[in-house]
Length: 302
Length: 289
Image (tube, rainbow over all chains, first blue to last red):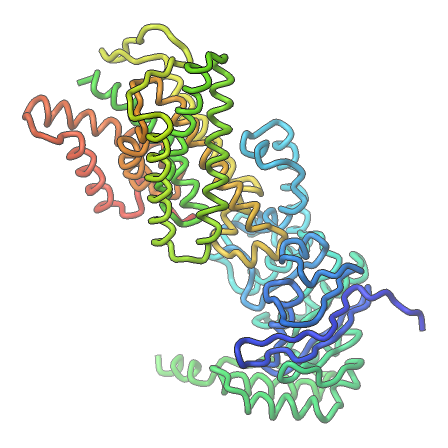
């Protein structure tokens, strides 16, 4: 097998918040051109891991190598400029701006003029600004957001804002995308589209993707390799079908979620069982967590 | 009465110019910048020193004044604002009041509290507008206000301006798309100081000026102008500034001269402010961000 180049190499991450060990000696590598999944029960430290990778959290120990550079000590925006794009579980769109404005904002690092010139509105900046608008329009078309390009993000439904978040990550012209639960909250149709989008990003745009995802069928469908995190430690790693059969993974999902002090404990447990049930029948269309029963009842009463 | 309206219009232009800087900082940092007036004072005193004391050409004074103002802005950003970035806005506000008072004290120490006269950008006698003698300097001031308010409104449509807005709303999301918080902070304070410097340079030659002249007489009406316009609206700063100027002077005319009410100018301003905030709490042109 041809040895691929590591685009991301994480070595021995240690992250503690006071007495709480969030990440414990976490190491992982992502090869160029791969789609890699990062799964694990809620509270396993997946998002914290992303926060360490992007420099939002500063781990107590460990190194992050990105594209051959040690970025462990670089601030977030410098890592972004090196080609680390990211989406957020709770979205990174700015609600008061329109879709176009959000995407233009994400192109910020490519702005080729000085602050002073921009302020004085020099002729060149007008041209540059038009160029940026054109590029933004292209990305917006790519994600099928052109109809709502001038709507404020705050007024859009969740799925659209999520797509906008992804468009923003892509607008930073990344080498690698870190996607935090790209399928959560999407309708089944939207999730199917996501599978296509992810493959296209990898194959056509030559992007490398590391994604956190709860939805095991999606992970099994698109990921080349999977890391499983539990209580901040790497539980196991491997190809998706190995992972799905791994007894410890099943145990971690069932046992782990129930044992953890989560606020939405019951919801999360529901989620996990749904996910697992779906994972046992990969041929069938994915089942999505239903609305909590209480809400349905309220509807019936009203 | 026409003369009072004309006087108010041009007086209001100074408030508007300061208010544009106040709105910029508020949009970007959600803080009331009480140091905005002193950026103007620093520019005026520097220009005065270069032009009058050293006898250098006027343009050297203008450039030197603006450089001094921006330099002050960047020092304030580095020494006061950045260390207090995560502090509460109240602490930041008090610190900025401190900056204003400190700057006034330094000016008094260096320049002595004597009244000075700065030569105007363009000399010549006043123009008669509605029966009021308006100096060419004041005409320039109004034009510059219009241009700068429009330029700033446009700036917030550019991706750099969007980066400033985004940083104020979600700093982490902004960083993840490659925006440097420090660069944005420097940009905002540099621009605010530049706007303050322009206001100071244009207003100093209109009358006599003393240390703290911008803060002590201009800043409170400028804040009223910014609030009146909606605090986040740049056209609002323009409209607010001019409204405050006109109402102040109408107050002097109607209440002061006709009815001999003391403090007529202030009464007019506060009546207007109360009225607008009662009817439209978001200000004349205010909306989110």
